[in-house]
Image (cartoon, rainbow, N blue to C red):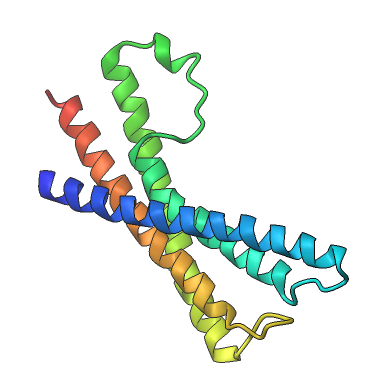
Length: 160
């Protein structure tokens, strides 16, 4: 199990770097587009590229955010519970999250195949949209694996 956690940490860390790259790219492209607009030469397709990079940055950040427990949570009530009940709440939350993201991942893969079959492309640059959806689905697979690892860890703490 520790081997799985190390591999997921490694993969999540690499995805985090990819997300940071896309975030940086969004900032640079937006800055260059604004400067170009001042001189009446905006960058063609910059809105599409920034949108795609935003989706990819978020997708890349999902696994590491789950791994580091960086999601927003309201813990006013849960913090007052005994340790065992907190772990039960965490286990329930993780299980529901896993169920949700398994469905989301499955539907994303189906949607990407549908987009590919239809040949749908972006409006201005004619980039294949299925590729973005497919990458998002792959990131969700990693997220699901991270959630499974977290469930196993929480469950092992619960039975101690």
